[in-house]
Length: 140
Image 1 (cartoon, rainbow, N blue to C red):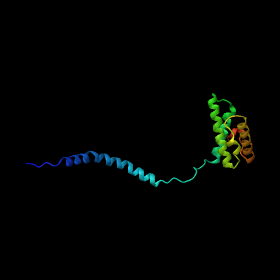
Image 2: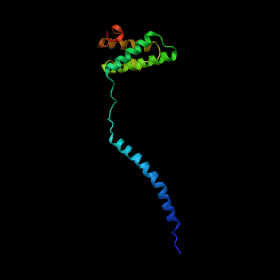
Image 3: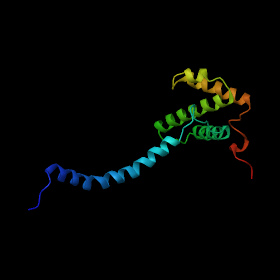
Image 4: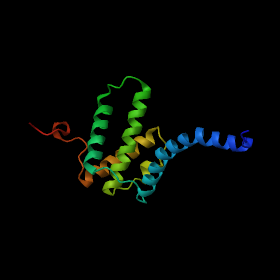
């Protein structure tokens, strides 16, 4: 007569046979990703700023869109104005122009428009042309 093993031995063997492939594949997918993430060290500090040329090009493009007045809805005009103000602040910070007045004014109103004009004048006096001849494009 053959001797039977206890129930727990059979259940353990069943669990190993069914769970082992799943655990092996899971580990094969997750462990290399975790190791790679640990090796990748992100630099501590502020993110790098785009080059000043790109910022000025964005500022001129947004200024042309605002001055053309071709924006359809009020939502688009407000979004363009907000984007223009954000890029204007970035350019001012990159050049070293004081941004306290523009940053402290509310988003809408005549105070914001005046602060924007002052920031634009300061940028112009620092050597950045906001409305260059030829629309900012190189002559062919």
